[in-house]
Image (cartoon, rainbow, N blue to C red; front, side, top):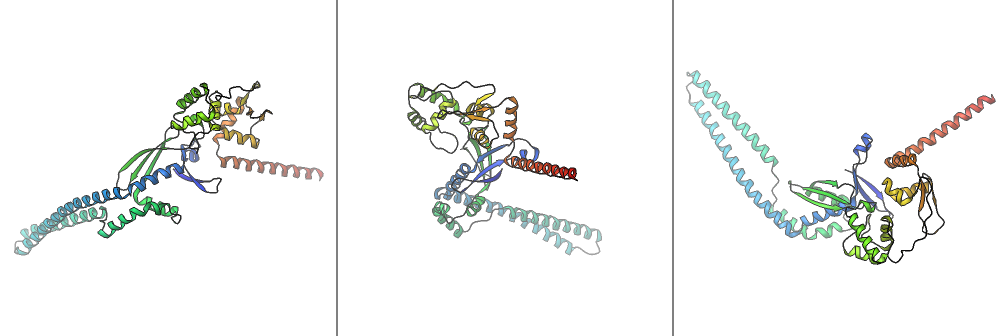
Length: 376
């Protein structure tokens, strides 16, 4: 997944991880994406837990046991090398003690000596490759430095003087790769962290999503909100109950508010407790949609449709009554156009706008040239 950065309202850059190879190279749909902050927090928590003093002592003890096993294997290698050296020396002595007149015997002893030398060379090369793949052994001073750093690492990690580059370098020393799989279109993301050495840690991260119906627990959330509303609870009380039961809204909001509850109740077609009396809604004309209904039908985020309305890309009108939603004019052809527009990337729309301007400039130039020819 590639990382992109978006500047928030506070001016800070926020990462976003996106898998868009299918879309960029083959014109397909975006594979998956998620806000980077939730994944970064999860990986940081695992990293700091891994280098905590208690976990670090266990890791150093395991490294010491592994070192003992490596030393035992190393002794076996040295014994094999000694036996190969003995075989070479024996073949050399036999060759030197042979009488030159016995040419057949000398040639056989020479071949045996060459074979022993070849086997010794091959065994030495195998040992060199084996030694090159072994992890470097930590000295006692390095182990003590690691223990000292473990006590101060959380503070150093969060210090203003620590840059993102420093954090990335430290993370690369301990983590080999992170595999991310968004579960459907929901807020749940399966994460597998592969540590240096091969150990893996599996977990689930909650990402912000754009719509309520993307939440994996939306059916139970809607049923609970409807139950509380029909019992006469106001939006404020419903929000408190939902938050106490561990239900969370989408996007980057941690808790439900009264406004969020009213939006939820509107989506499921239910009014909030003490505000059941509603003004009569006007009848919709042919191919007219309420903005929320159109968003649910097309699966295009409401904020995206609202932005298109403000830019004049969508034909819509707003009633004069207070707190009335927008009414969008969209026949089947318009619905198909909205789907195509949503599939296009932001850069593609900007490029198309530039091409339209160029086309207008060319037409204007040609018309001017024709007028000049006519006058001539």
